[in-house]
Amino acid sequence: LYVEHPLGDGQTVPLDRGQAHYLFGVMRQTTGAQILLFNGQDGEWRAEVTEAGKRGGALTCLGQARPLQMPPDLWLCFAPIKKARTDFIVEKAAEMGAARIVPVQTEFTNSGRIQRDRLQAHAVEAAEQCGGTFVPEVAEMVRFDKLLGAWNKKRHIMFCDEALSSSVHAPLAAAHAGPWAIFIGPEGGFSERERARLQTLGCATSVSLGPRILRADTAAVAALTIWQQALGD
Ligand code: SAM
Image (cartoon, rainbow, N blue to C red; front, side):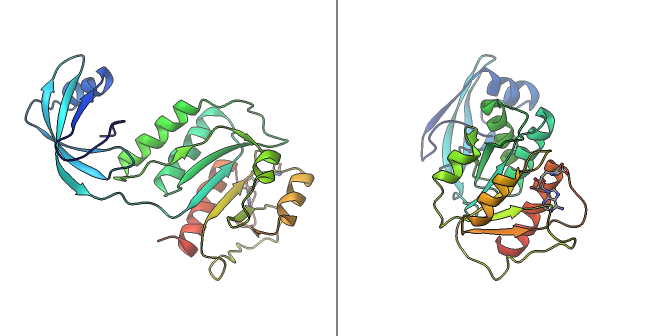
């Protein structure tokens, strides 16, 4: 169970109404039950239910089950698309071990706003479902030019470019160990100016994901897979 509360030896962790409903109503747990908790920072903790009510409850931490396992330093920078597909991208990025998820407003991005809290909740659920101890942060939406204007060039970019030659092309294996960011464009792709900006930045590798033009959500999963295979752990 994910909680937004520090975890440590003997620490009491309060539960809000939603968490109490889930744990005691849906999962049928009661006082004395042992539950695994994580908060994205302190690893995974065994905890005992010490109070179980309809409107709330409390647990007491007994001991650490697993230390925090940080994923590789990989960001997924993508242009948000339709709501359900954006949810999918965030969920899959969290499952596949992205450390940070960055919605980017590009020239052809249709969706001018995102519901960051909703997307963050999807990242939490995905981390819960895959037994992770870390939850990637979903950043505020940022304009493409602002993001690249402040880019630390030590972070290498995997620029997913559908205009490259037709075969899957993953020149990542020999490349650069260190922080990375995958860039995926919107349904209309990156504009010519944005493509040129990425290509001349000096720290981007253009990568083809194959001969077919993939929808942005499919492209995100394919890119994460290729990156994980070449450079993940
Ligand atoms: N510009 C395109 C068009 O309108 O024909 C489509 C863009 S595609 C739907 C969305 C994004 O997914 C692209 O900007 C790119 O980052 C990524 N993408 C899709 N297919 C790809 C491929 N075969 N190779 C590399 N990237 C791909």
